[in-house]
Image (tube, rainbow, N blue to C red; front, side, top):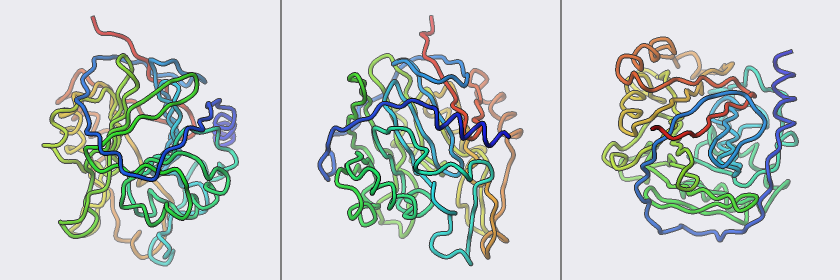
Length: 317
């Protein structure tokens, strides 16, 4: 029943469409410092103003964001399971939104891709999505070019430190700045991306990186009102796949976040060889205790899969 309600809620969301084209190129503009002051309140409502954001969690690393009227699909997994092309090794299925498909998506302004691996750049989803909307603007890490180039005609690749602007319905605009995420390979390889998204001068700024891996020296000059991050670690023997807990606290402190929206990207029904040795470290309750102790003015806003989480802007006097 809850699943049906979540799917119905998503299907009824009204997102404006966007047809502005971009060239397939890296945008060389550097990011400027983001430093705004805001507070927020959350409720599952159906529309946003230019001074609010709406975050709809689709499980795993997938989101729909409405940021001041600009609508972004993030790291979608909507077709089949997550298996990295080797289901005998790992096969992960969503727990709640298994019936939500590409055809249920609202109109979108942009597809945002953080990493080149299948849990972010999911080829089984992106192939039919590109057929449905081949001109959809895409913003991505250059590491994903070999996957995206055959599928989409309108891709902007951002290196960490570069930014681009995105325009939605009625002239609403956001700037999207790429930040340095994890290095998935040898140390000299280009890092994957996180992003800071800022809608105009008086809107809420948002930071997102789905592994809680970040470059402290890179981020020290930036601020984000809302931080979306994992808070529960996912670890293999001798290797951390996804960080969280104290690293998420450090991240929130670094960005002077007012709200932390935790991801549960390890909360899947899994099977395969890796699932037997993959374990979680930490709990949501432990993170909440750390947050109260270390950043008492920040708040934890836990999303429910399929239900929009509204965060509204108001000036702090």
